[in-house]
Amino acid sequence: MTFVRRALALAFALLLPATAAFAQEEPQLFNAFAVAVASGTIVKSGEKQVMVIGTLKGPMFVETDEGPVDAGSVVCGASIRFDTGTAHHIGSGACSFSAQDGATAWGEWKCTGYELVGCRGTLRLTGGTGRLAGVAGQGSMVWRPSAHDFKKQLDGTTLQNSTGLLIWRDFKLVAKAKP
Image 1 (cartoon, rainbow, N blue to C red):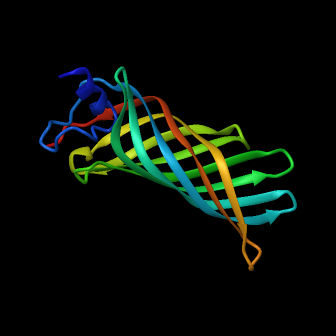
Image 2 (spheres, one colour):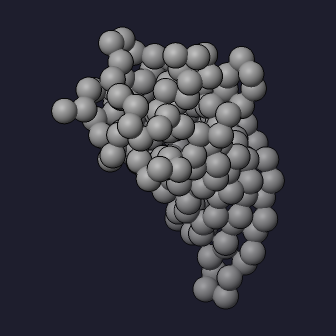
Image 3 (cartoon, rainbow, N blue to C red):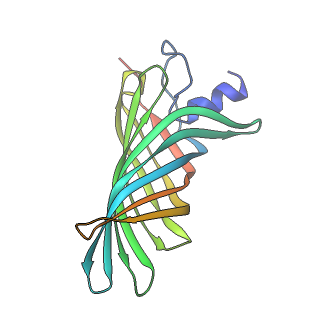
């Protein structure tokens, strides 16, 4: 298996042909990122508290020695609570990773952080479909927004659009053999 094919297998096997066997004897480590657009609604939830409910989505790339390689796309649902007095926030959600051939993997995440720094936590894979059925794994995840656009609505809520990076580091991938 070439280095590039091995790196792709580590990243949820998203670029391997659908006929490739999806089994590993030992966990594999990899790094990946997505260039994400986030959109959501901000609701005031307390004196110094706001809550953002939204989605993050974009193309996903696996880091290799040859540079980033396109590995499909990711969509994540997010619920993040902000303390406007301290800029601290805590969030959670779920993601769906999709390959060009239709195979999908799902995961759940939690994070904590500060405004302008990002939200750091973990992502845990919970399953998949197609050649990603039985996939499992866990690693660190960071949402690092870089630009914001806020629009006040008549009902008092605010729509937020952001761009930024979703980053997965030292992700340990374990795949179960398909029957």
